Length: 104
Image (cartoon, rainbow, N blue to C red; front, side):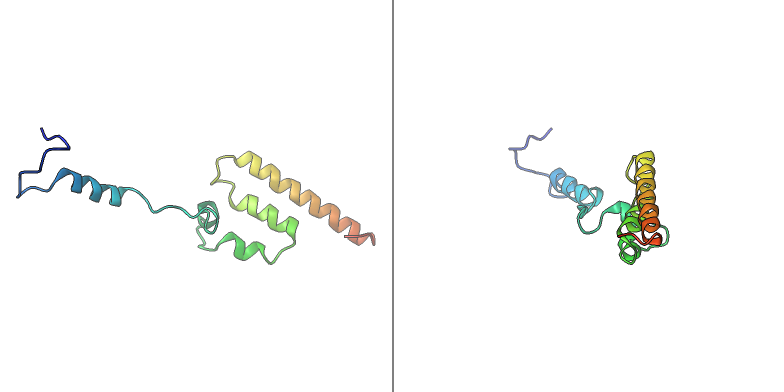
């Protein structure tokens, strides 16, 4: 058994610390950029990123799509569906007001 402060004296074998470091580099994934590339927005089988779709919509529709887009990836699908529903209802009310000649 070798202790950390003892020298490695087997020149033909790979030093265990180096093996651990190499394994760690293979096993540990790259850090995730949750601000610019959140995984739940990039997991669509289409390969399309959510922002590329929703930036062309009104805020309410975009927010609803955002919650539907990530419904299976954030761990709270019912809550995400309820949030999407809330934004859809808000958009319906906004459009009703517009149709009646009211303010946006």
